[in-house]
Image (cartoon, rainbow, N blue to C red; front, top):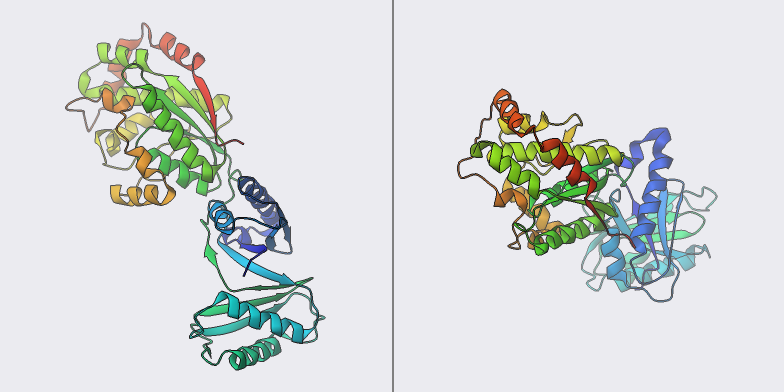
Length: 396
């Protein structure tokens, strides 16, 4: 059977009260954006608590369409539908028999009929429809059985302006439509964690920009391209990402020259946060986003995170903070970033890492040692921000 329409179900949006329409409109826009990349023409519309996608073209790629819809945050379930005009109950029953025959090759299944009348002038009530349709399906398919508690198949019939029939519910990503919860600046590296952090925060409705700290010639152009590729992969879910590429080489070398080597990671990280915050303010972001997880490396102990946060005034959001590495890897594999993340191109953090980094930095000591940089650091930071490169990814 060729499905020419989809019912889009949402979860959290349904409890938004008087603001629900704002979130529904945002979800409609995100669906339209996702479907632009699919072969075929589509119409997306909402009506009375429902969002529908109608296929307008004669031919389209069903699998591709579902795949793109499964990347739209805010969607709980995608339901391929058959929609028919109301031409009487007998005609409807014939369509339902045809539907079950086409969709379920194995008839040794249990089912339950669930009818809903949004149009109350329909001559039969929901209970009568359930009973009558159930009996007709049992007559048509003797191997089928009714199970009202845990059926293999829930056959939904919604009677509205048209009659909608569906039984397949494909899981969506959940979350909130991107853009409904402001914008944040993601510190994106070439590792496993930060792309997952971007995905997780975008799932909560946050539009993301990103900043990447590049250190040529110590990091190659291929390392930079790896980060661009990761941003593109995340943008399949988050929408377009404005990636700010900052040349961090001179700052890193200056820190390496002037500061104790066991504090290199913390002090470099503090300057990354300062620069990211400067760019975030210029681009109207409301906070910084990182992929840090407590205790994963020396720069991610509670003491180190406190020292890092001290360098900026904006809130820092860490969606992975309580996850272990395997949990993060599992998500990266699911969203398609893992294979790119493990490509062997080093980023600037790994190139300049100390052999024995401090794990419990004393903030007063860190601040004292940062004063060794006073002669040139402001000039270097200003130059890095002014010379940054902007790469826009994921924008059609």
